[in-house]
Length: 92
Image 1 (tube, rainbow, N blue to C red):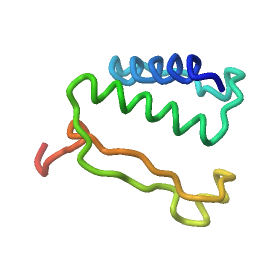
Image 2: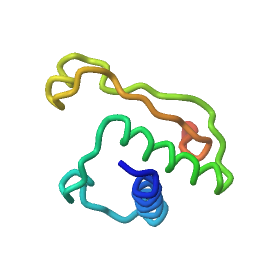
Image 3: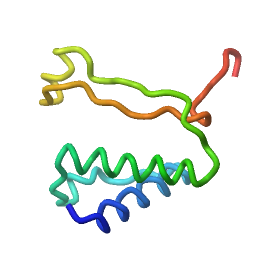
Image 4: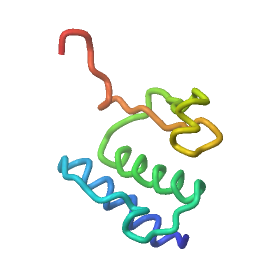
């Protein structure tokens, strides 16, 4: 996938997240997205969050169980970044 398309999709997903709008899954819209493409799109979204003043406070790992990996037809866990805007303190 070309860098321009990665940036466009990352920006689209960031805007949808910011406005709390739903978007159709990218793969259902005909995009052929590799695992590397998906991580690059995610990094573009992270960069937009950082540009908006958020800061990285940690990382997360998901899809760690074999049962969930089989259900999603993937063969490894995924990972992402946590920013300060994702924190919810007890009682909020």
